[in-house]
Length: 78
Image 1 (cartoon, rainbow, N blue to C red):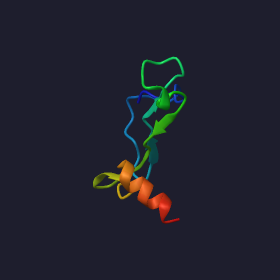
Image 2: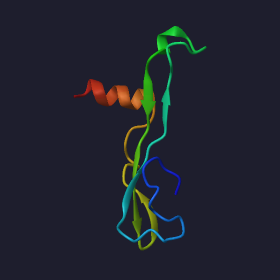
Image 3: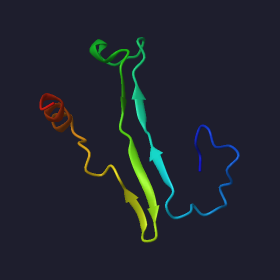
């Protein structure tokens, strides 16, 4: 496991069944970046909650909206 706050956890152990963890990739656009100015200073994260089951890995957040249009639709319907 290569994460930011688990230096005391061995990479040589099996993850026990029932363990839930997150996968949290993110993109952050600095103000001085070469990207278009309308994107400067914003961030985007797509996070998944994952559980280890007896049958393998299950993505608990699999049904969450992913595309911009799906997220915008969800936000408008609130």
